Length: 120
Image: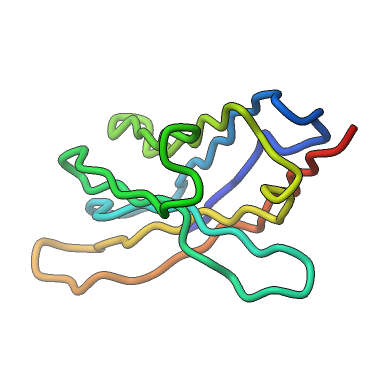
C-alpha cells in the first residue's frame, strides 16, 4: 500500500494550492483520512480530517481557508488551501486509516510529504 502526495510548491501570500493524496494497493476499505503538517523546528500537527462518510474537522488556524475533501472511488484525499499565509509553510503529510478485510483493524499509512512554501 502506498500513499502518493502531490501538489506542493511555492506560492505568494494570499495564493492558493491544492494538495492531492492517492492510495494505491490491495485494500478492503479506507476509513478516516487526514492531512498533517510539520513546520521547520516544530512538531507535526493535525490540520484536517475527513471520515468515509464525509464529515470534516479542522484545526482552528485554518478554518475558513482550507477545505478537505475525498473521492472514495479514487481513494484520494484533497486539501484545497486558499488565502495562504507565511505561517502555513510546512511539509504536508497525508494519512489514511486502511482496512484489509471486513473484520480488519485500522492500519495507519502515511504519504511521503509535500512541501508548501508561502513567501513573497
